[in-house]
Length: 331
Ligand code: GLN
Image (cartoon, rainbow, N blue to C red; front, side, top):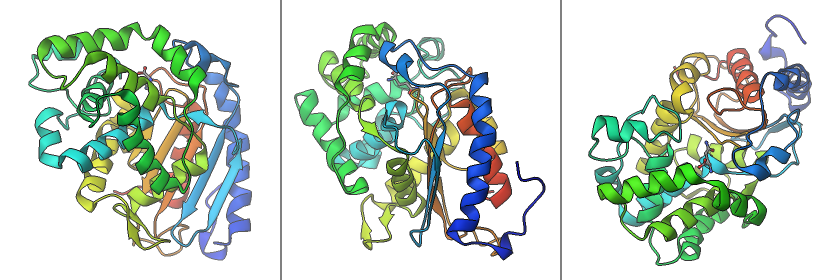
């Protein structure tokens, strides 16, 4: 790997940055051996554990992509950011914040224990399963397909095309997700759910099973980095206040019970999913003009081998390295 700190002032061209990123991806690909692909959703176990890819899109459109850039994967928990944004846009921010809190839980993403132990008034945050399932119950529509349609509509605006539902992954999760059903029943008993449990769970399983690529995640990250604006089109896709809340949640809760460490060592709002994806939003920074992407960027990462908290192990290490080299931290 390229050692030491480069003089970023001498480069900045796409080709020049590309060499570095290629080198870093090759190096961190070896780290995929330290993790394992998720298997509690059986179809996810088919992923190649050694895959690793990254896509970085800057405000000017400069794009650096490397590694396994073309492999599609399902959004999984990354969809929780999208469904929360959609619910806020449809129902209003205060309505949503009355029903789902914005506090890190410090527990695993699929924990049910904290709900009962703390006798909470509402689920801790929309990025853990209990909160996300509650959000799925609030999305407008009587059927899961109508609810999903509002998610697809926002994704289509963000990505410029309509992504597809991965039916194999959806059926695999639907038929294996006893834990999420348990969370659902608990939410039903405590009165947190706003609508029918089965429709809610179907919505949740489907939104987790939407196929994307790292370029798609980089585009989503870019819009969030710019407070909801698509800078290329000069169009606001997500209202500023909602984009900001989404970024706060990503920073404080996006990596589950590894969120504090990620904020400390990487310092970028980001959200992971168990299929190995990570979306990151890097806002503009004015500290050092010599650094690449000072006007902000969106980053998509894919690396299905996960660490013990359910986040892409090599993906996080790669992001940490790039954030340090290019001073991407928001702090
Ligand atoms: N669909 C997954 C689940 O509910 C999402 C979890 C995740 O990506 N961490 O278990």
